[in-house]
Length: 421
Image 1 (spheres, helix red, strand yellow):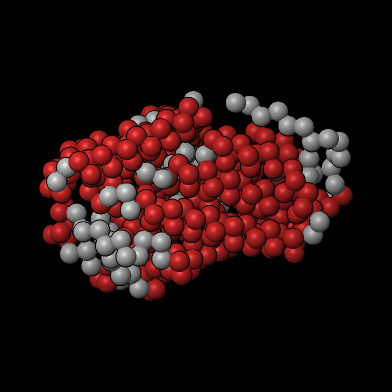
Image 2 (cartoon, rainbow, N blue to C red; image 1 turned 180 degrees about the horizontal axis):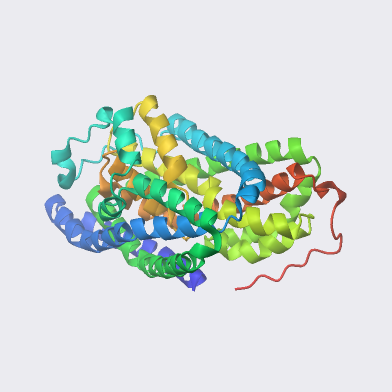
């Protein structure tokens, strides 16, 4: 189904370019803009559906993940070591993304007019101070945070709720199970929403090309190339640090996770590579205890590729609209994304949810999401594969820190991997 969805998105992208080009050439500018406005209704529906799932998705996935970390001793030892790596890798990926998007300026000189809906807000990010950050972070009502889609507040409440559930133990077993079941349902809803992506891609691309002409595609080419160059730099940094700690074992890890990497890249979901990742990491060898704890933890807290994308996409949108965001504000954005990107798991195109929330939080035009939606599938492939590399190295490093002999090498037989469709 995911392979078919990828094909449908590519087809929708091509059709959108064709329809947009015909409209741009055959119609007067005003008529082309009218066509673009009508086509954009589909993307408006998609945007509303994406925003609809933000609160429930963050709450259920984060609570379930934190509650299942284990007892407090395990959280304090293995979980603590894992979080040291996760936080360091997250900061590194976010910072590389910010530096590269500022250096390469993929959205510069696009000069897209601000959408009418955002005109009354002023689009002034300079007023976003530390006081505003605190008010956004600390909820005065958990229900209000969910009702108003205050994502950062939802994250704070969810982490506290999950830790409390874990400390209570068996008394919260039924409640945690119920929330976990709810997270599966929300993930299914997310899948339904994302299945509409081809229609949204078609309308987004058709509307943009119809209004601005095919020259807009040059900007997309620069955007994609800039992002993959940044990902390559991140891969080199992750492997370099991993090699300093693991030495030659880092090469073995890369060899073993090659197949999961391909699965994540082709399906645009690191979740699809999860079973193969567990099997291959045990062949490093990493103990089943470490793999079963650190790997799922990493799938919630160590999404290096996804987080780099969030900074890249947000800044690209700001550049496209000609909105200046200072380095101080960008650092605040980095810290915000450190938290808001957690708990999104490996949902295909789930980073769009984080980007949508970040745009609202920093008063950037929500319609800017449409600028990146059309080529998101191609970027999702890269960031999902990056998440696989990051979690493979992270799990092995934590095992090394726990005193496991990961350097002795595992089974040296041919590494034939059966990849489930």
